[in-house]
Length: 194
Image (tube, rainbow, N blue to C red; front, side):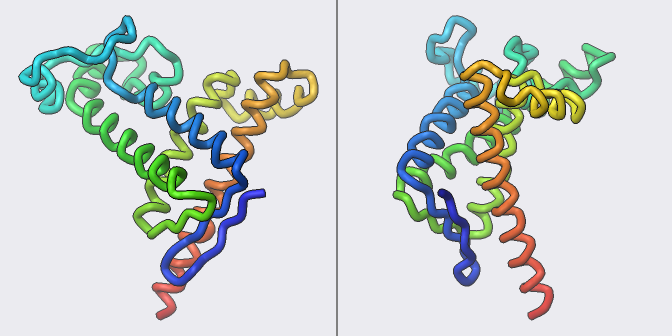
């Protein structure tokens, strides 16, 4: 079972091989979901000038069709499509880059081995990346409100195998995120006491 311990200013996350393998798989999947690909799944072949235009918010970014991506990049105002499109054009590229950066930090840590030493910045990246993956899993489970979450947990044991596994993964990621948050808060409290 995973364990999280403080070591000075760092946090050490220890994972079993099967836990690490599973996390490598799901975070690799999240990286693919976040990557810039065309609608037909081909690699982005836009000229560099268009990529820079996207980075600078000079070209429109389409509203995501995938509900999981829409959860990660929501409309700023669901009642105002024009305002949401403008906000997406100005912010989505940078937001996607930040999310992808967090996932890369997680993947690098997972590839280091079963004991992963995390700095404070690493912990923050892990917390954000874990949250993004939990949001994706929640969408896949149909959890969009506290009531839907309660209903999903109430049906535990009646869910199909895929949903049961997804819910178990969701719980595992929630536990890790909670422990990392607790470790970070304890470290910050220690900084204030010093």
